[in-house]
Length: 101
Image 1: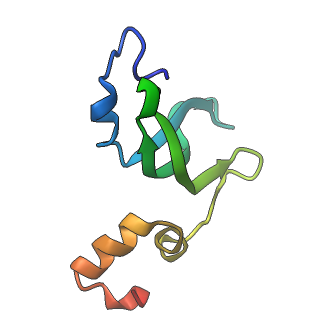
Image 2: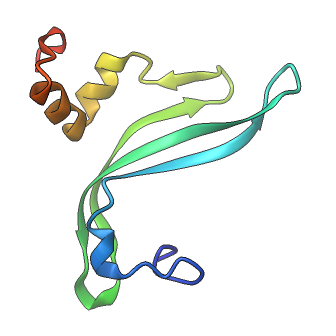
């Protein structure tokens, strides 16, 4: 709903082009540096445009960041690819057989 409301005003038909959503936050590190970090990322498989209310019907959390341990889950590229349908497609298209896809 945020995407179709002001100030963004994205037309619902264009929402079908969105493949992933990343949630970013400003985080203060232990050494007092402030950085922007992606804390979660979801992959969208399908959006329903019925009744002019776009709703993600099928999405998967690809990864998340745990602020208490300062680590990502999953923590290896192979595990991220395992969760992501689209990354599996990219791996196959580029001949990345090391990941067994």
